[in-house]
Image (cartoon, rainbow, N blue to C red):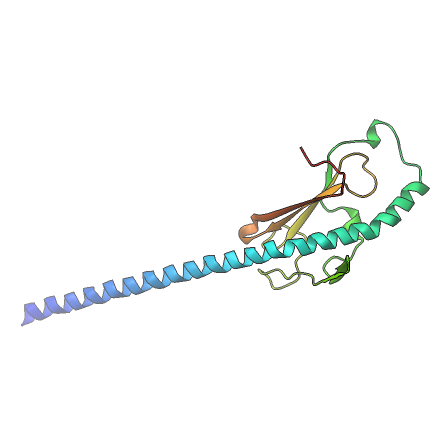
Length: 176
């Protein structure tokens, strides 16, 4: 019985180790799948939030347009080759810094609630981290006044871009 009992004990231990390995592998695979699903859900929330931020930027630009146009008329603008350039971009334009982004707002009679960053649970903000957004303004002519267009980028897990929205004023050419 000694030799046989020893073999049986080893076989039982081996079976237990194999079962434990299978349970552990299955548990880890399910956890990885849940994590991927959660990241995909959060990135989907970023994609749904970008149109609201686009409306907020359009609203902020519209509010700033009248004051900006009035200020341009009241001051002498430089002329010559330095005053006209094509496809000028600016990533954190001063016009948005003067506005109150991050708050609920109304635009074209619609009320909008500022989106929440699905990765942090806080309001979405400018940046390139998960759940953040970046805006790039484009002028097709004079560097003064309101931009002719802007591009809005939403970032997902790992700070990778997951959605890009482009907006240009009516009659404004599209980037080549």
